[in-house]
Image (cartoon, rainbow, N blue to C red; front, side):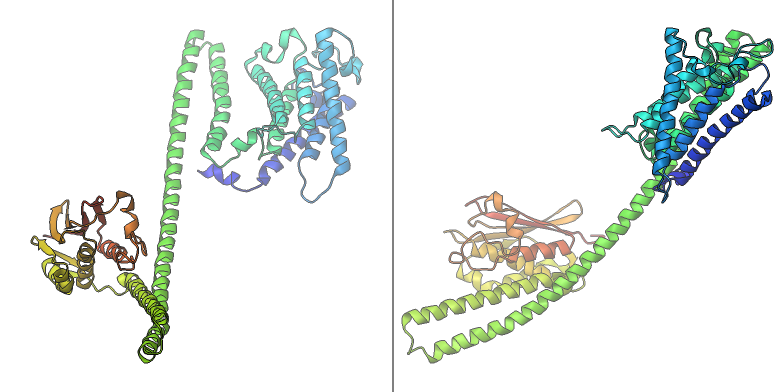
Length: 543
């Protein structure tokens, strides 16, 4: 939305410039009126001959409040400590003038604060109305002076009472301006008192706008100047809510006075026109907000895609570096381990007759530890190479893959007197070597973790929702459900090494291989109830 560009900077300087222009306008217009009183130039005192003139004390009060506002606007790099003090004094004088006049209007006490200058020329004549300070003018001065004095006071909710005071003064001026445009005396001449002069109403309206613009990032203005949808709504609808009914009402009033339509017709037209105009404005603004939201969503989506791409690239780089590290570390660790194992075996052979039973036992412990370390390194290397060393996928027959795995386990099957059954397995796309390892690890676990009875293993596959669900079921010792996730984490063992051998890497490797093939793996089991491992692979295209 275009108007947001004006409010994206940290300090919207154009609003501060507008505030200075408003302060200068208030002071300069009042100075012209005061010069008219001094020189006796009625053209400077009154806009029209038969209209109320701005009181000379009112003109001085405007000069004071305009100068005070100018000095309270922040000036970059220019310390103005003494001028700030002068601004406070002038604002306090304006408060005093407004207060005294209000007290006089409410109590009847005669301070004659508005008759200090040119008192002989202020009374009403046949040609001109009286030029005293109106009660609503005094109230507006009281509010404006207090606003300048408390300009930077902020409540806990970050609201600024000074802006509310200036806003009320501006609304008093707006009522007077509308009253002048509609010839509605009650709006600018309360209870038959001296009316507010037209130029006075203009000055208060300009001062109110300038005061609000002086602090564009605080209080009420924080919302109006924000580049959010709320700020856009406020910037568009507040001026429209003021000027559309005002202008429409003035047009219809003029038409009624010329007898173009009757009063009830004018009111009906006003209602219908207001409904139509504001409906059109709401629809127009809704379209702008909709477009803005779409643009924002597009930007956020592009940013999210960029972040995802960056995260993916970082993850791929990290995985590559991790695989390289694992390969290098495995190679570097295996070399000294092989040397330790070789020399321990050599020591055991050459010093067999010289060593006692305890020394030979210690050598045995050391060799066992070295062998287990070599097994861990080998499995870690296999885990890291699932992605890096895997071959390209091809169409393979799982029947042949399973037979290869079973052949590799033939010795373990015979030793455990196991019974291995399987149904016809399908063809899939995958890495033959890695899928052989999956079947070999799962069947090997079934052979290892068996109970008192001889192992009975069944391997099957069922098609479901575009994928093959493979199962490896056994009658072994089972798994506690709380460990279902843990068993697929690297180096996680559920039993002591004295009970069952292994490194705790087999199922983690299976999980990584299956995920590389676009599948998932899980287990269903219970203690002493056997286990069934499931993993999925995509169905062949067209299969």
